Image 1 (spheres, rainbow, N blue to C red):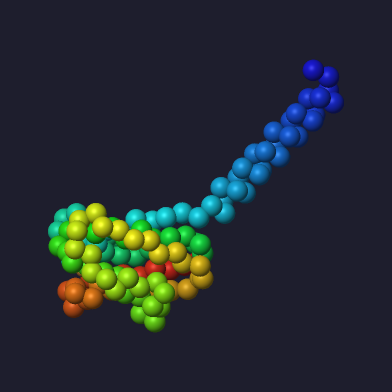
Image 2: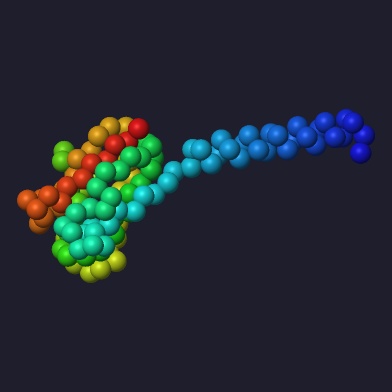
Length: 119
Ligand SMILES: [Cu+2]
């Protein structure tokens, strides 16, 4: 391999690494939130979630059903239908930065509330 070929090969490898890093850094991710904790508490687990714009939350019915997730002032993010079956799930995508408070309608009084911060 002559030095020019080596230079080109090295440059291409560096370019691919840079491209790979930039692509993975903008890839949206999905955070799973359980409805009802594994320990049997009336709470979201986790109840405080930090996301980047474009990320999603997958709500998964876990214990002590029924549950739902209502986002105050954001009907488009709310899932008012009650989930009864364990494992029932749905996803919401957060496109805009901001703070989003949510709660479970049947258990709001018991403290089943949460907060999403989208950066
Ligand atoms: Cu609930």
